[in-house]
Image 1 (cartoon, rainbow, N blue to C red):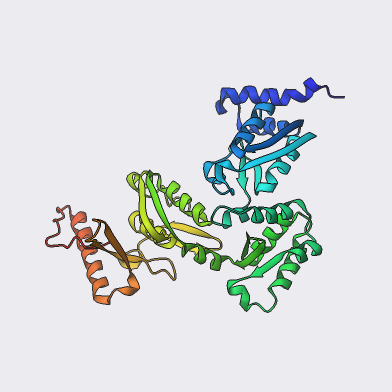
Image 2: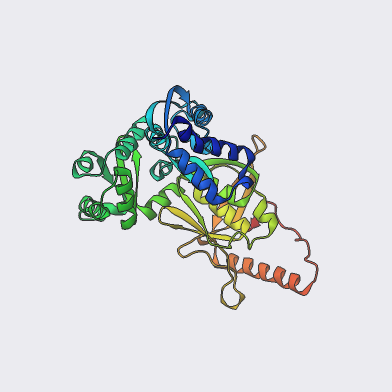
Length: 381
């Protein structure tokens, strides 16, 4: 029979190594210590504490530090002031954390030798602060095994391209049966993913839609941005988080960019869509983006055959011009972005000629002349 001291050894060892830092133990040692600590029984009572303080309290009592990003906290109903309560008695820390985090749409996972509280995918797709009604839907799905009874009790609404399906509910039910046993969150997520669909809570409803429809709908939302002097990857990831979209990068696409572009990116704009924000960054960095599934896929721009300029992703309609109009009232400047489809062919041809001339001068080593007589109100990008 294990004594109390025996049960505390893994937690004490983890706390000691944690204090020394990641270099004190290898990846495998960290993984082992964390898993052993999670398997220890614990007793905790948390009463109406803000989420960050509650996680810090658990770390103090168990020796297991749990990290949570400020952006994740902002997804909760009251942000940093979202209060949580829990009573954990004589169960493993693993089970206690699962029961503690499930009602607020979070999971506990080991990432990079750290224990982190992360949102379930459906919570990210909401794209704003979640409501208590939506958390109730997530909690019910996460705490009950998938069954016909659970499925029938959901207020499921099919949207977008699925409205043209003859029987989307039947297809979803059949695919869920193929997934097998699991709680509602796991089965519904896997079933939708296998069909190319996504789902998310909306009030007391469960919205199910095509993944591409979902991505394009999210990109059309309007927001304001004030992201200054940040790494390009961080800006793009933050855009995706706010839009409720996953952002994925083609391997090597960021590394191929100049260091100045890769390490310093600023996006300051008022009342533009997420699509416009991605277009602005793509135009400034040389990356190409497209909607794939429920996310945005970014690739490095590559020249076309015969040295032609990079072409946009299939179906794309990039912005090629920005028109700046000073306001006579408050000194502000209004900027209009012009898409390729909105320009006459001769303007597009002129742009390509000018780009080719500049590239030719750079290649020959001749100095590039400063533009003469160009209007500050129209600039091609």
